[in-house]
Image (cartoon, rainbow, N blue to C red):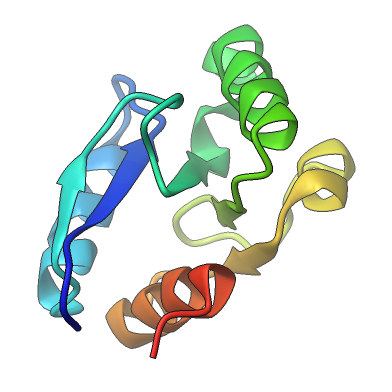
Amino acid sequence: MTAEIRLYITEGEVEDYRVFLERLEQSGLEWRPATPEDADAVIVLAGLWGTRRDEILGAVDLARKLSKPIITVRPYGLENVSPELEAVSSEVVGWNPHCIRDAIEDALDVI
């Protein structure tokens, strides 16, 4: 990979956020945090849907307006994602570091 990927990751007071950052680090993907406007992709941690729904919808709406991919990560330890989130997601992934990297690269069409 030649360039860092800019990611906006929904965050909040849940274990999912910390665990996701660990998995992203393990993936080997070169990335840096960004705002939704400047991001190459938006990462939605579905475990935050219950407490940060308005914030997530704002980031999703902006990503859609700017034609940015939306990658939704299932709640840690669960398989279900809100149908509303699934409908707007480019991909829905679990917690395997390599699957996370592949989903981001595939969404950005990075080789």
